[in-house]
Image (cartoon, rainbow, N blue to C red; front, side, top):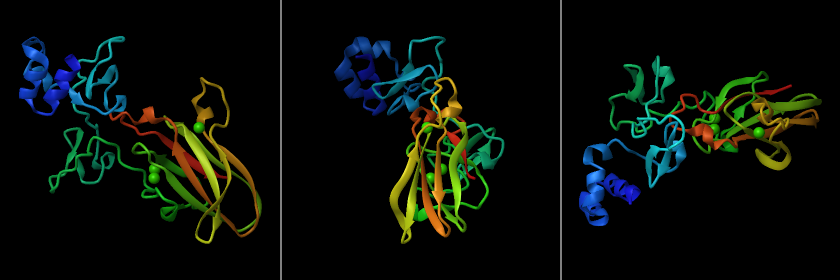
Length: 240
Ligand SMILES: [Ca+2]
Ligand SMILES: [Ca+2]
Ligand SMILES: [Ca+2]
């Protein structure tokens, strides 16, 4: 009943709230306290020590309670570079830049420098040296990279320097300007449970001269996308 009361109030329908819950619940959940709860679709939308119950972030009951479960997420910043496009750094937090319409995403981390590369057609061309500072700036982000080999070699395709990411790497043959067959894939380079660097991915491939490949990198650690995380799941990528 408590959760239902919060949900109803989130819709701004206090009449419904009273009808559904009766006076006792309304008394227990005052209007001012209702506005301090935050709408959520899952745990990922809530701060530490909060859980998503009936679409509201509430204390999870474990450990030291977080008094700010209802606070809207804010992104700390030093400069505008810490914020998404259409957002500025104002008084230490990312905020809409004042141009219409205001961005609703200023609390989220900016994408890495190689976006957009969410489809094979939008691939990032591998420059011949490691790509650093890649990230999964939002849930479901995938990064496509394409690479051309002039000479034959034994090539290692590898993610490393993981920062909260659990990468999954797929290598596809290049076929007429699009990904052809899946040549190889890898999730984890090792399986030591307490060693997060094991969650990096590596594929070793003998590549012929004048060959090209597409690489698709995705993230298996969705909990790294909590909106209160300042840093999105990140990684570097290299071929050597
Ligand atoms: Ca990315
Ligand atoms: Ca991407
Ligand atoms: Ca992995």
